[in-house]
Length: 141
Image (cartoon, rainbow, N blue to C red):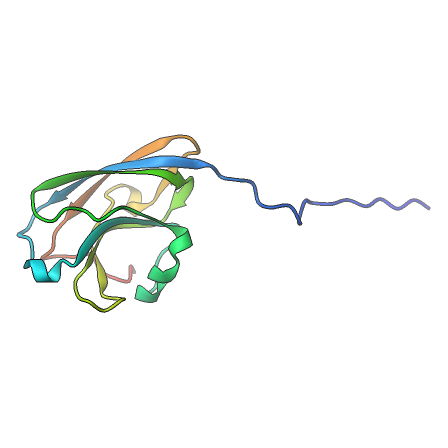
């Protein structure tokens, strides 16, 4: 009687998905809030759909820009060496107070419900419109 044993590579590390580049343009359509309410502003792309602000601690599943400039009508940004794959929730987030969890979305990526896929070794360009007076519903429905 013969015995055939196989392995599905379960102990090997997962294949590296590689990286890519996200570029984007942000347009601001409403007056900026007072500077005391804009403690920080960043583009954030999440590999999941957030349920509440505690999900902002899932840093290893997000691509986060450097601080975006305050004021102005438009800004461009570039994030390099971002893990390739699908991002399910992305846009501009505003830190509006000193509390660690005082973040809110103020504009979302405008394509396919905000979902996009960054190809390995490739790039993707996104557009975001920020309206401080009418932020997106959070958490998303």
